[in-house]
Image 1 (cartoon, helix red, strand yellow):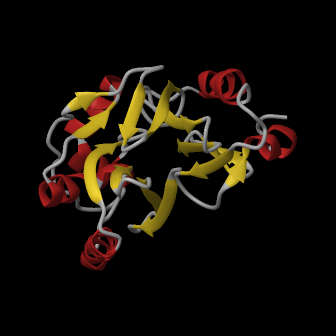
Image 2 (cartoon, helix red, strand yellow):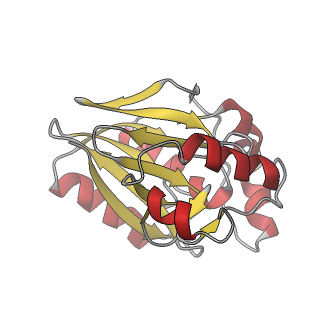
Length: 212
């Protein structure tokens, strides 16, 4: 069974996740750790729970979701996985942040590309990779049928959807992908969003003003 631990980090209140199972293996999803105290908090969590990090897997590569990639990659000597169509965001991480008045160090290239309909594995568990562009061209979500969870990044929020005004974004594409790819999953699937609180697919299907 997958355990999901959420950390709300950096000046943009981004949700970073550590997923682990009974084997003690874990993965980082969207590590946005920015401040020194956030770095220490995640190190303490990994050590206290005796976890073994195996990889970083990103839903997408907007700067607030990759602020902590180099720290995590260097601290635990693990690879960074993301979709190839978001490579340009990684290459321009520092420039991205500057547009929002923030300083972020450059991020080294993606080590391995995530592929639609393949799986991310940790311990005895796995998550299906679903490519859901619209917010970002390389945006993916991670779905566990067994655990009824969806790590949605910035595609879908509680009562809202991701912005589509950044390079590579497209509103119609995002709406179509949410309705066709995500809303086909079970209504009781718990959604862990890239910002804000959790929700369920059923709740968003019936109440989200952007999707009803």
